[in-house]
Length: 248
Ligand code: SF4
Ligand code: FES
Image (cartoon, rainbow, N blue to C red; front, top):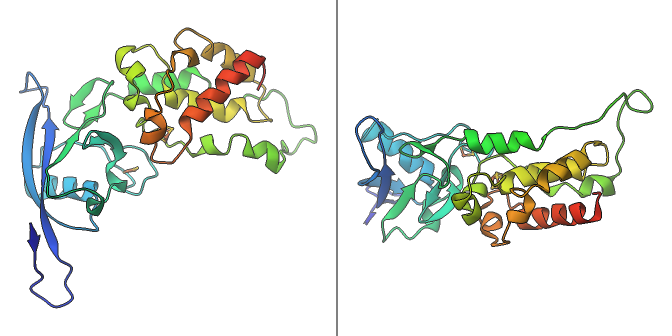
């Protein structure tokens, strides 16, 4: 419902209904859905709506956020059934004539309300050695040089903010808790194709595992979910090709 401005020039507000999947492990046996009516501006984001609920209606509503500007990756959640960042989802881009459904991302243990345990996700990330592996000092003792063409090979995968939107939208990850998941493969890709790195074969071996890249069914959920626009499925395909070739 739109509220007309009472002062000329004032931006109109709307009442939107958010239906949030709540879970408090201390009192709830199962998650439950709870409605909240919130007055918002079209320029507000879902994160603003969650803040209004927390600050004005129910201080127990629990969610993660830090930067509020799409950088830290801490507020991935399912909004109307799609994984998105709350801080990048504008109210004006949603149909507020209908309730907006919000729940935690899937495939990771639910801790409270919109918060999941991210440790299994970070375990997979850590297991691909997501850091430069280069023995010894650079040839000139100063820097490891790289041409623009060499840098371009892994440019896309440098953009990852580890939000888990991709991994938690993957049906293989939902059903197989051992699968590395798209985000770990994206972060392996970032170093596998880096000409300065000397650990590519180690990472390719790790991802050739039965829970590695071959579990990917190319459903593209991950690419659709990525708030950074990373071509996640393409990156996974490039890692598969590198394994088959035996080198990046
Ligand atoms: S690849 Fe995209 S969706 Fe996946 S963790 Fe990185 S930023 Fe998030
Ligand atoms: S709060 Fe940091 S990405 Fe949304």
